[in-house]
Amino acid sequence: MKKFLLSLVILAMLITAVGCRKEKYPPVKSSDEEAEVIMTLSLDGEEYEVKYELYRALFLSNRRSVDGGDESVWSGSEKDAYIACINETIEKKASDIYAVLHLAEKLNIDPYSREVEEQIDEYIRISVEGNDADVIGFGGDYDAYLASLAEQGLNYSVQELLIRYSILLERINEYYKGIEDEALGAIAGEYEYSEEDVRAYYFGDGCARLLHAYIQDGVSPDTYAKMGRIREGMLAADGELAVALCIINNTSVTPTDLIKDRQLTGIIVGKNTLSEDYTDYTDAAFSLLPREISEIITVNDGVKGYYIIYKLDKTEEHLERCYGDIVSSYLDDLIGGELLSIADDLVNSAEYENSYSKINHGEINFK
Image (cartoon, rainbow, N blue to C red; front, side, top):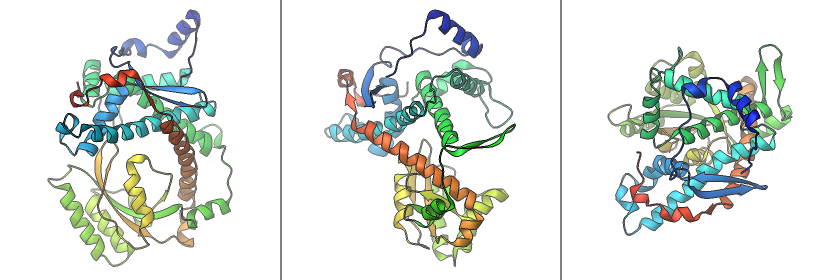
């Protein structure tokens, strides 16, 4: 991993420049066990350390998809097969995270710049204190915030890494797609494209136009059964408008005009648009024929939920009407393809360290 060597003077200046938030909500040092390197990923001379704290967090957030809720399998007679399966998932998830850091550095976006550090501090402050918008927070109780992380299988360092990942992913999108600046107006991104490029993407095999129904697991006594009833309604509906209205009436409590519009016109998905968590969703999107309806698809991207996809035709009228959304999807797909290529290379480079042999998967828990 690239190391940043700073003199004590420069380091002190940086700490002062970031502000007092580090003093108010100081970083919590990882334990020796948490800081042990379990796996290394490498690419283009850069090395990324997957420490036990990240391995544990990824294990806890994904184990149910492997063990189905039966935690005894991690110490049972077939544990090696289950461990191999979860390790494959952890390698992919960790590689997704570090692919963003790798691409950011490749684009000369400093993952550890003063501005990034200040954004992380601000995110943590809002998470602890809440704000006037939609973050409730913990009333300034930092210990309660840290306890909530532990209940999710996280610690300070992993949360900081995930925040950094989110910030850098946004910076990468801005780099390629451009931004809207209040003072300067629209600033173009690095990707150059023509209307023909967008048209080729839209009508090509790598792009799908969809309607989908979605409900988060647990919002009703039997969410899965409710999705089954919604699917029956979609199958019985006559035409795409009827399918869209069936989705809106059964999954949106108070949909805004924007939500209604997108649920009526559909969304655009590219083969590289969605993360690994949505593999089943993407597979269904590109295996369906127009006007076909998928089975219920389970997705767990940190929050478990259910989807049903209805495939729409791609038309000239829709291309013209929703051109801006289609351009955004086109660029998302280009960025996703680049990140996927990096992540694949990182996965293939994974090497487990000696400390991995000390892990007892049956004893990994949230505290």
